[in-house]
Image (tube, rainbow, N blue to C red):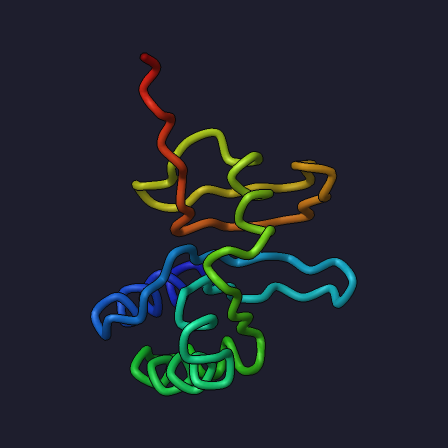
Length: 127
């Protein structure tokens, strides 16, 4: 799952799909891992167009369509889940991925996550 997700993120980047955040997230209520992409594409072109584009690009990654199936979630680039994950991840995940398991952030329980990319806000310089 981790390798296919990484490859799909690379394909999305190559095809200029503006990925702000990308991660696997375990949704306890459905007991399923879902591949999550947060992008301005969900706001600007609408979620249906975004899902169609992700679906088409998924077919470019061997094994991705079979693995992901309908287990992809497209969020806007301003979704509250991103702020929640930023609180839970101690550093900017620039090299490899960052795993989270059984942790709380902003009052939200995170059963499991594997983060490829997550936007971090820069602290403003003090005067």
